[in-house]
Image (tube, rainbow, N blue to C red):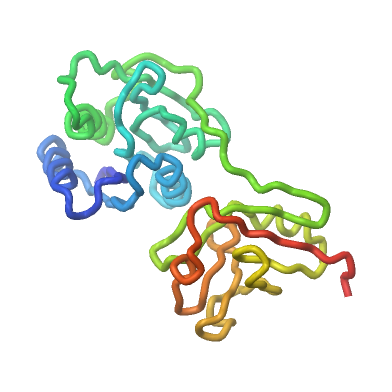
Length: 262
């Protein structure tokens, strides 16, 4: 059964979700619709990219991903179809896909939208139609012309100084844990067996170990763990760290390494 996934910033109480699902089932009744997330912050393409990047690899080949976030087409940001790793991605080329794919995808098609009626709900008209046709076996080339590269946003990267990594919060999950842009690979490279201190909210809160599981730390205590995406996550066991410490997107997380390995 063909799969179409949805990522939007509409929230679950909007009629947009029901309207889009109804249109998809009307056009291709044999599909399976998977809601990845409808809780992306309004117009936040970077958050949508993070969710897509860390979910799509678990889907089978030929899955179609429809991304309805900040979907206002312009000459600089057209609608595109991407074919990558055997899957298809449909949405606006506003830099979001550049945060998902490090390399240029196998195929990029800029959608010719002239034959569609222009309105304020392109997900319902343009993207639903194309998603269903591709899920049913149509080739992306028939919907437009080849585009050589996707637009790219500059990702927020950690800064590295001698003995220090300065990272930032890039995502807050449903448990209100904070996920940073510090990868396990970067941490291990810079740590090199040294002792370390992770500082949350300036120097007020300090963590000196990396957990393998959340419950290795007592309930209500701060912890650090590398999550399934390979990124450093800061949490409170059975707590809500972003609320309690007023952490937000772009809040700083600092790791200081000590030269003495003993």
